[in-house]
Length: 88
Image (cartoon, rainbow, N blue to C red):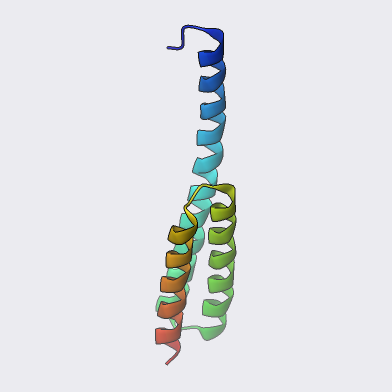
């Protein structure tokens, strides 16, 4: 437990950030899973739509600092590669 005022404040701040980051990370996982499911289904239109949605969510997470920029970029690239491979 925090024993002085500034430590208590830091604890409150970190708790807020943790909750915010959890929701963003959860959204990233959900969108990525939807994209993977669309890829497996083979529906080209759904793949494109879900890829765009997942890329948007990943970019937002990177801009908010939840994910590192390179991590978001790598995940987007892998999803795009999977979509490209599935459409061939």
